[in-house]
Image 1 (cartoon, rainbow, N blue to C red):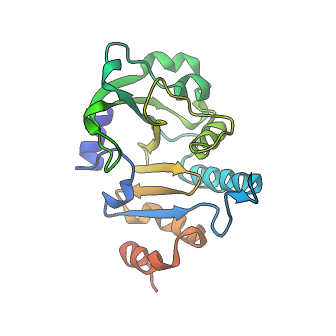
Image 2 (cartoon, one colour):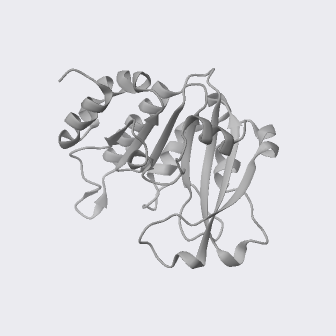
Length: 224
């Protein structure tokens, strides 16, 4: 089953783009590194980043088991003049442990789906996906790279003459869950079944903004 077919069946109407939480009726938005600051004086707060890595990786490990079938999806935002030579983002080169899978990466071209950011006519989305398993990925380093999007820290996602760093989505085909870390500030989880993510909410309630908890608990039908 290819990505388009899977999404049409399990998440009809969903577009893999930032703010998947706002597109879908079952989901949780988590704040990473709550009550910590990115800077201490004029220096980066490296303790914050270590804490964020731990939180984001812990959520990933709770959502994905070694046996789960998954897809690693990336949206690369490229200038329209680069369409003749489209290559997979460095995400696959740098963070794919099973190098034999690189020949199975699939690509399609999408219109830009970024709201209120620049002239949408200048850029397009080249979307790549790869079927794999958790053990095929160096996911701890990949998660760190995602959290470094806005900072001069390594590792990095890498981009090929793109206007933006690529967005990365972890899709659990076995459990019908999508995990999206947008940067060091937070992440989103959506599912096609409430029961699938109730344990996650119970374990990470402290990462949910207090103003959102009542709404999420009603959605998940958790007793208030």
